[in-house]
Image (spheres, rainbow, N blue to C red):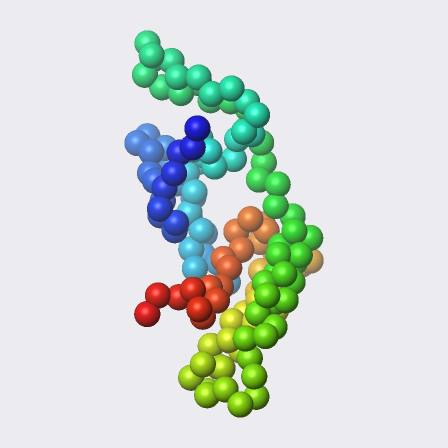
Length: 136
């Protein structure tokens, strides 16, 4: 079973507080005080709906498994995948967005203060979009 919501959207649940945090890349991280089913619950647990209470029986919470090592590995793979997207003889209008994208990827650890006392949690990283995936 999957509970889906549009990318970048936030579903507010009546009666629950919401935490909002400004991130260093000018984006905002928002989450409900109690996460929704499917956001951070183990998929191996049995989900049950209580018909009398008209609510889901919430399984045990499991922390998001993202680590900074996983973020850096993902970032490195994204850089590797975009290696061939820039050539010296490309027009600047095509080349510059790829340069900016790759720079943003390289800067992720520094932008989110990795290794510092004020480090942001790795699951809050807002990934830049590759120029060929951005809608015009």
